[in-house]
Image (cartoon, rainbow, N blue to C red; front, side, top):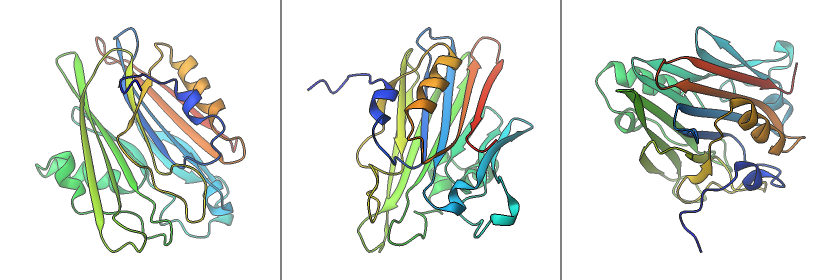
Length: 239
C-alpha cells in the first residue's frame, strides 16, 4: 500500500453518488498557483434549490428560486471570504466564525472551538473548513473537520490538519463517505489529490466526476503566487 500516493480526484469521486460537500486545497503541478475548490451536493428539493454567486471576491450560496426555500439555516451562507492574507473556505456559516475570529486575534482552530457539527439528526453533518495563508510568494494551509463523536450526537470531535504547500499536491476533505441512511461521516485524514496546472482542466475533471443527479454547484479559484492574479470558475447546475 502506497500511503503517499497522489490520487486523481476524478477517480476518487466517480461512481460515488453522494460525497456531500467537499473542499480541495493545494498547489498546482507547475508550482505557480494556489488552488482552492468547494462543491455542494444535495438530495432534497431544499438543498438542490441553490446556486453559487460571487460578490467582491466572496462566494455565497443563494436560492435559485426564492419561492421554494423551506429552511435557509444550513444551506445559505458565505462559503469563501478573505481576511488580510488568509483565504477562508467552509461548508457553512462557520466561514464568518473564522473571519471574525481572525479579526479578534484568534487562530483558525481557536475560532472553530466555538462551533460543532450541524444539528441535522441523524446525519450530524460535519462542518469542514479550510484556510490558505499567503506570505512571501508562497502559502501554507489548514483544514478542519468537526464531527459527532458517536451516533447519538452527544459531543463533538475536532480534527485539525496543517500542511506546507507542495507542487502538484492537494488535500481533499468531504462531509460523507457515501450515500446512506443515516449518511456515514467522512473518516480519516484529508485525501491526497493531484492539482492540475490548468484551472479549466481541474474544474472539468471535478465537475464531471460528481454524481449527475446530486451535484449542485462548484467553485474553483487559482491564485498566481507571483502576481496575486486570481482565476475563478463557477459552475451551477441550476442556470
